[in-house]
Image (cartoon, rainbow, N blue to C red; front, top):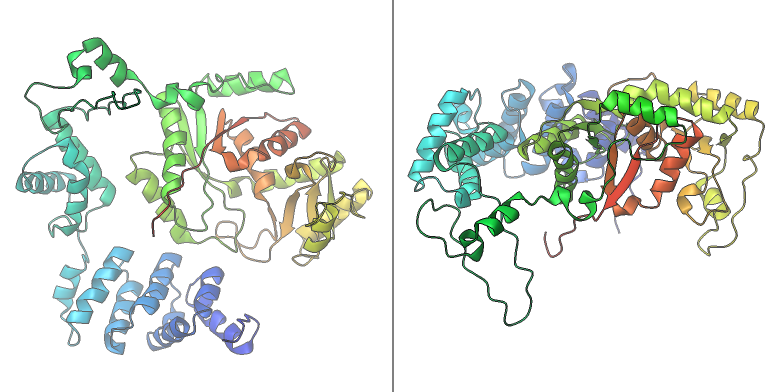
Length: 507
């Protein structure tokens, strides 16, 4: 059995320090250090290329660590050549890095700089007009325009050397524009027949790529049915069709509803709030579609809000990737915001909540908190020893947390909710904890950070979100969401849940 990973081991700690010194985040440094082979390769690269002399930006450092993981077939000279190309910003993306590795596996030293740059898209530049011409030529070479070939066309452009390195979103938008010019708007999908059983026969549907010839579907033969089918919208049916009107969500104080309506002018405001601690997966596409799509359908706006409240897990590359995916799916955020925009206000509200007797500083361990909540046996719940401490005492302790006088795990700020409630989301959730890690936007200003349960609903309130749309795993959280907003007497958005998207049998 391999020895247990210990980040405090002197040799491991030295490696982590080295990786951080050239620009790699602490989280990523720990991740690399867990893999001895990759860590050894990265150490060689950092020392050989003298990367600590001029620390890299986060994304560049991430590419260097990726190189260390994927360059096993390269010689030291070829590997270091790629590392220096990343450091001097010739290679800027994962795609370019993969191309560089493949090229030098086949074409080792002596390296032809010009050929390397050409094969890896270094310095590639193309104007919108040039891109349109190249894509038009590509479409013609593939047999002409057809909406049902859209995905194949988009994927195929990645293999065409003339447009291989063009921005993916620009390529997607250009293909859509050219198809629309030639064929008109993309046809809307026809809903499947509701009929069931052996007698229900499927009618053939004319290919969406065809612009001529008689249609054989019943819907196409019936103008009324065709109109009804094409005008239907997912945002007007089922769960989404039953959402409240703007201003229709009940408020503790009527004045808050009026203020909300004055600000929104009756428009829908939603938000897509991912945590920047990893790459988006296919399930996120549904969340993006619902939040951005519902707002657009109703003439409103959707924020992209990064929920950046845990500096230990966040990396710059995830911020960039998230925005790229949102745009690739065809949406543009109304505004890009960060939970960290509101750190000062969130802190002030935490103090306010404590002054109201609805929050307290707790020194229990995780095991003690779990036991007080009933433990694994789901036994009786009980208040911890700190729950009823004087308000001034909690305020003093919270200030000690804020000023760095408490270590991580020594103290937390908890909301004083309702331990008798059957909903675990009301069992005195954690509002603030100590994290001694610099934040990517606020640096060393804070050593206390708000939790998701404290931050999410308050940021929704700050941004006057009309519809807080999330997956059903957060159903229980709706109670604590509303509790906190109402406890602070602020505008309370309405949280509504939809089923999450899971796909099985994939790799």
